[in-house]
Length: 114
Length: 117
View 1 (cartoon, rainbow over the protein chains, first blue to last red):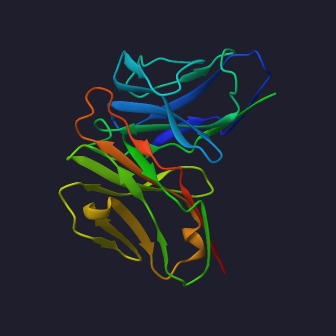
View 2: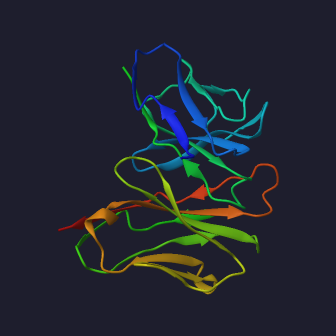
């Protein structure tokens, strides 16, 4: 079964620590995305990648970093520079940029930083 | 500027009632795409429908139907005979075809639907 796997489902970190969220897809999709979801704020785009070894900042990239060394993988690092990292993080992929095809989402990672 | 408005933050219905979720969008582009996604309590967003701006035909899929009206810039979603499993947050989204390299979806804030037994 093809899909997107995000791990872990829940993640707890102390303030000041960097943390990396995993996202793996076996759908053979070129494009991958990271979204942040906060209560009452909908989805906000952090980073996206349309092809291996290339990625672009989204609307709220500050305090985050990504890499795209393999087509299947798009890990997100939440750095200590991110002021409010506690949130629900969703990874997604698509065949082409989103205006042509729907996004496929993972189950999300809920990050809590104390 | 592009914008998607889902004015209903929360809706609560009793099972078997029909319910309509509103979506109003703003765009200056003549070519665009509209989407609906469902987010159940498990967290994963599930794609429901995509509609391009040149296709104003309404669509029906089982108990789900969508009414696209360019004259009012609306793309409303109706669930007929709602069921408890329909309880979720529903998102409407807009994508402009000519957004260049920075293509991205514009999301509404979502409507939380609770279907009570």
